[in-house]
Length: 186
Image 1 (spheres, rainbow, N blue to C red):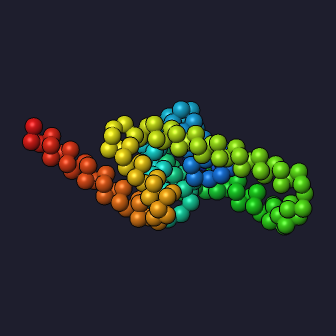
Image 2: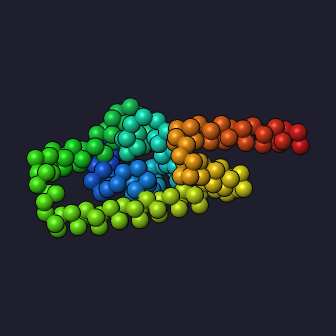
Image 3: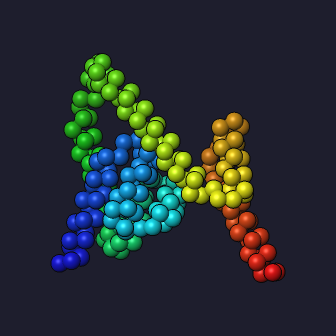
């Protein structure tokens, strides 16, 4: 009976996350952190950031990938499926209801203005999430250097994000191996 209660809680928690996450990706990080780390205490902050990082660098929707990871941690394979189903349910329902009306929305000025407001709020949410991730993960000069070089490569040099990700992975592994070797020699 307790396992069934946990499955329902998993579904409804991710359903709520899916319902109130507008903007996807980074915009959902503060909501995930509040719900999963602070309220439910299902995962630690570092663990959530790891799930998020893996979800960004693997195929698929970030929300779905994070839900699957968290659900799996909480209740195995069934938990992964239930959490994933929970996070996509609100979108499926809303999109199904709006599909026939979407072309009519473009003609309604108040709807266009509301969407502009939502876009600004999403940008603020993404900025906040990026700030928190930078603050949490850039704790030494090498991390800051990787951040600056990665941002510059994507923003100024238009290097494909995949190339920057792969290079950053290699840099992280190299830094780890160098530090490991230095600690071994001491």
